[in-house]
Image 1 (tube, rainbow, N blue to C red):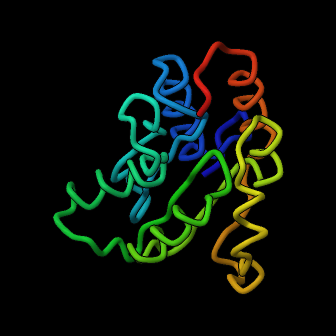
Image 2 (cartoon, one colour):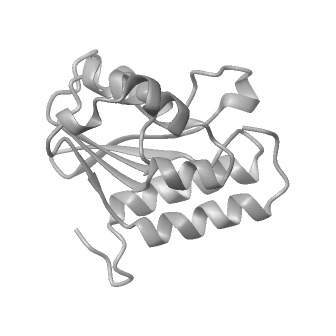
Length: 158
């Protein structure tokens, strides 16, 4: 699953999606790939600014596309790769969709460094300690580079 660069190929797809969103002014540096049985089902990225939709995070975009492609609301057996640790809205959406495993790059604390308020909601809702191994950090350094690119770009506030 690891490429020569040391970046998981599915995480690289999520990073590429996030870059597309950044370059097009769609929203924050959050890209996602959903995979089932080693095959990519869907990718997505943050569209909060382009759609004027505060719920259209990268995970939500990818979940919507995967469900449409597979013709089901049940994504059991799918893994989700995302550039930033999911906010509570996206985490719950993954659970409602029956995503089997989440891999994330940057942490909630990293999200705060580039201006996102996930830590605030995490303080209010908490509970991540009860998830066991449902979520795992992967390729954080590569995702931190993406976040730095976002920080240095001209972008709207989201």
